[in-house]
Amino acid sequence: MSLPSFAVVGRPNKGKSSIVATLARDDSVYIDARAGSTRKARVFPMEVNGETLYQLVDTPGIQRARAVLDWLQAHCVDAAARPRTVRDFVEQHRGDPRFADECELLAPIVAGAGIIYVVDGSVPFGADYEAEMEILRWTGRPSLAVINPIDNDDYAEEWSAGLGQFFRTVRSFDAHRAEHAKQLELLELFGHLDPDWQDALRRAVQVLEDERAGQHHGASLLIADLIVDALGFSTSRRLPEGAPVEPVQQALAASYRRQLAERERRCRRRVEEVYHYHNLQRSEGGLALEDSDLFNVENWYLWGLNRTSLTLVASSAGALLGGGAGMVVDGATGGLLGGLATLTSGAVGAISGGVGARRYADEIARIQIKGIPTGGKLLTVGPSRNLNFPFVLLGRALLHHRLLCHRTHADRSALALDEALLEQVDERDRRALARLFADLRAGKRATERRTQLGEMLLAWCQQHDM
Image 1: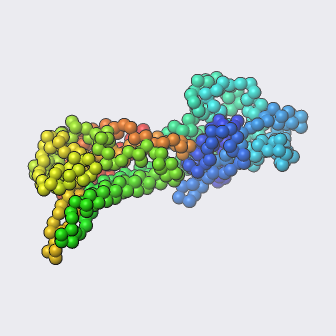
Image 2: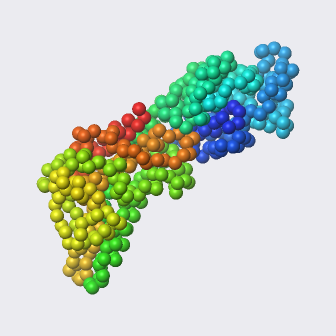
Image 3: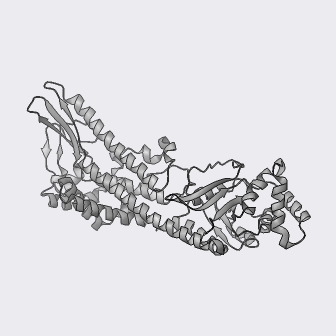
């Protein structure tokens, strides 16, 4: 079974490298807004579990199509000799700086690659494009044309009519927004264009579909583990007898918050790696998702439950734990968590029902101070008893996952955390989650509840491809 290879060709700055990055699922592909940024042909394999399914060749832009076509027409005797004439052109002009780009892009084609011809649907079709399309037709290789709407698709219809004169198959394909199914469609199309590749590409599609299912499963487990671990997380520090308590409380609370935030970031990186995003951390400081602090409670009703939903689910969690034990917050914090309105000194109370849910929606974790028989005190921050806290983690994780699923490897823009994704979770699931989280806090049926949470997450992750 021969390995399918596709040369992605077209004029400079029409999105060729973006197409390669998307179809090769490789965010290391260099993408630059400046024309002519690709000067040498470069191969990018699509690999799954160490097996190469097909490869993409990123090529320089066509610069001197008219001159190349004039040479071909002057040296060709009949239509049957056209592929051989193109080969002769490449062999005779290697090293000629006038045709360096054309030789780079034609070399993989005459060596057996199929052609993906890329045009920009936001600019008008012109007769001057016909020379380069004619050259590609002379190669005799299987080909399809892709209309990439870089700014818009205002001229997509006229491009489709013009391209149809030279290519059997024409498709619109936004390299920055093409969903997973759209990418697989191009592979299936090529299988129909070249019978020699049909079995290989059919298998590639199946492997990629199976991998996608595995990615969703893996992501759901990572997110479930994050939430379960965060619900049980606490940190402690010993104080010698007579040592001041307040400075240690402040440092310990800051450490608690920092460690939880780091766990979330680590989970996020692992989810990105599951979907083969390895370079998003390069722009870490500019990612909108990172700019939003996990503990910025002003945004909690965006990521988690709003006040109305909190009121509705509070009774579910409170009834399960016997009068709202899941909302207990221990005090002596004095604004310890940076203005999060935690309870004041010495307060230990059980808050039940909707009133408690609304009043203490901004509380994060309890602080305990216990005497040690050998002398001194033990300070502990956590675990969190805030009803909304696991919903916030869930909402942020689901939004991050959806952004990844709707993103291609050509998209180098910032992720934007700006919508309430938990709107996709209906009221019945919210109540079920409240009971589930309450059980996890109480250490009840932990394995079963973790499994149930993973199953719910998997269903939501799968929805992001729909």
